[in-house]
Length: 252
Image: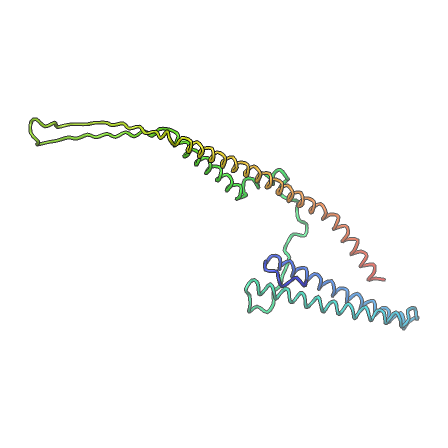
């Protein structure tokens, strides 16, 4: 717990508080166990002399060590709780109760590897940005291609006159069509189109590489979650055995 103070993330600090409280409860249990063993040892010495003073001294030393560990664990737990209070901004709160409300029997991961990949490819924002860059590159290529073709402009005009005499033309109209084609700069425009196409190809390559990376990460996390869930049964068996061993040791 010497790394407690640099932590700034509330969730990480919350986990530290839970771990510190678990260690504190464990040390308290150890103190109670050693005290019970010491009381039984005194009884055995007084009744039948089964144990000697050396055994009593050994248990008293173990009790002192257990109490010291309990005091240290209590200090770490309280310090962690106060650090959490400080981080979340509850300066006037003397203490907080940190409780783990996760289910005792967590269910399996909700997605398989393929489902995780499919969901990641739909929701990851960097993939959307990569797709938008491809669209942007395609638009820039179309704009560059437009400079290779001639420009056509049509102009129309209609005029109606009244009161200018009998010989004036009352209605007149004309239509003009202009065509411009800059052939001298075709080399520049063709190079620009090639550049835009290369940029579009680079954007597509980056998009495909990002798809592979996101798919790999999604599969890795899905596999890690599935493995962690499968190890729960093994850990549960070990915990049951440890609790039974502790119960037998407490009785003896």
